[in-house]
Amino acid sequence: MTSQDPPRFRVHPSPVGDILIVTTDDGIVTLHPFDGPLGAELERVGAALRAPLVPDESDAVADAAAQQLDEYFDGDREEFDLPLDWRLVNGFTRAALEAVREIPYGETAGYGEVAIAAGSPRAARAVGTACATTPFSIVVPVHRVLRADGSLGEYGGRPDVKRYLIDHERPAAPVIVPAPGV
Image 1 (cartoon, rainbow, N blue to C red):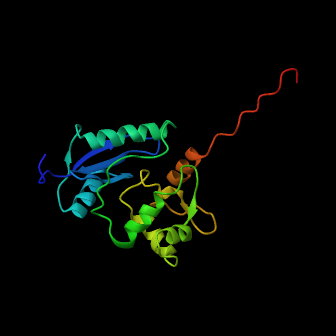
Image 2: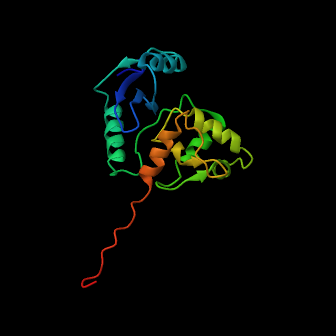
Image 3: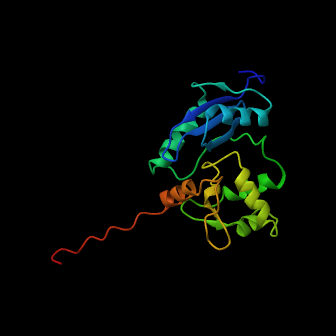
């Protein structure tokens, strides 16, 4: 591949709906569940990248992303190890998303906590904007960020997806086995 290769896309099925995976030569430039017509989503992402997207089912990074997503949804993966292309993210948004990446699997943090971790304690609203506009969903776990009152928030207008992901990461209730003879 050359540096002129266009961004490539793949749609991967998941329990939360279809996930659009877009890669460049530098890694994953966006990965998120989408709701609506694929063509409109491809146009939106292509406009942000200023390049048309081409289908590619043989991209090694997209293959790894699809495999790791499957492992995550099967309960066999807690962290993602994928190269991310941050070209659609800059400034404080990147600092906030890097801080979000540090929230452990199965745990949550408030927008204010993420703002502190990102080095700007008074930027809770900016964290909310960063989470709402992230090009990286699931692999950068913005679903783990909650409002100050503990409520979910919108998650790109799909709070049902956020609830699913949080519930998916909750540890299963321990199985209590009675002692012999009880």
